[in-house]
Image (cartoon, rainbow, N blue to C red):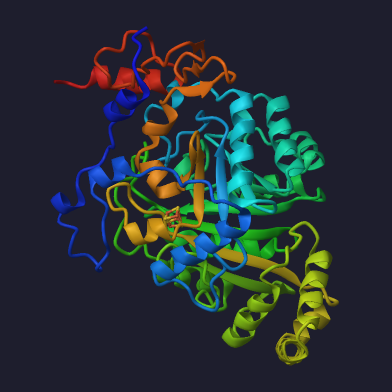
Length: 491
Ligand code: SF4
């Protein structure tokens, strides 16, 4: 095995991206595109002196990118929206919009100690109550006992773990065990980019969504769904939304992610009609109500949109239609933590927060009275049952079109061996992180874990990427498939 130094390792790794300037994109929308050298040079964030200064740093980032408004969550309620903790690079699906790298399947699962070290780093950066997505690949491919321990460790640190999974292996007994270990949310990713056999439309996939809902029903888990929106399902978005509305008694959160040209995905660049504005319209068609996606502000407005619906008797009502009330409520409750597993607890927290300001409480009562009047018939027919359903739009960037402002205002980090980094940036140079030897060992002797072999050695070993001509051993899994495909290509 060839041995190399870490710096050399990094410099050999490729950023799979042509310069935006070469692609004629400089004139687009006044964005400041990162070039290949900037992407290569970008490093994970330094650890802040304290959680409090982490919040202030987030606020400064919002100010610096002109995203600081009275409705901004980032830097006011949290120092980060969410951190992705990738516990495996393996997956049992091969989505056409996958953000993993062609080399991902070559990589062994990180040792549990390294995962625990990264959990400590997340805590050191962002503190308690941080939302951490336990993800991959598909995290359920990790040994079950390890997955449970990871969730338990996150919860013991006072953070909020979510499981992000395609659901294939997330059976009821596993969800039950994870829930007992402290899992807060389960996020099922289901859509047509996954090319599940026997399902030829999003409507057909509702059978799978329903099955997943039933697996998690009644557990102390907040149920969420991720949907990648691409050319092939854009017209079906209203049907997907209508499904979530019908199941609003258990589904809490529906996230729609616009297809991005990144990772090993094969879809390429998205169709021009796939935009935040057009997606908002498709969601409105499905909800049969225009929702206020511009009231709350989460990070950069070109990245994220959030709307909250109240579903009564199957009918949707807009919950964020009063900007002034929203802004004042956010100011008053920014320091509070809301329990996503108990609606009652969340409402009580909100009510307690509002009591600190009588004028705000009065404004909220007036708003509530207006909503009750608006929905009176449905409230009567539903015997008072009201469900909250949130919609989220996430517009990931193409790996070759990273807007530096959006990267600076990022609310979604991926944790690496040396700290958190913007997820779009991480996806654009994923190999630089996943193929890097991981330092381990005690204070006396440094050791290096090799992601290719899973062995630990005294010096870092070079990991041969799939397309490396010096690669001699046989790749695994999807890597083997790709290599066979590559070998079959005519010269
Ligand atoms: S991950 Fe990308 S799209 Fe998402 S908030 Fe960060 S920069 Fe924006």
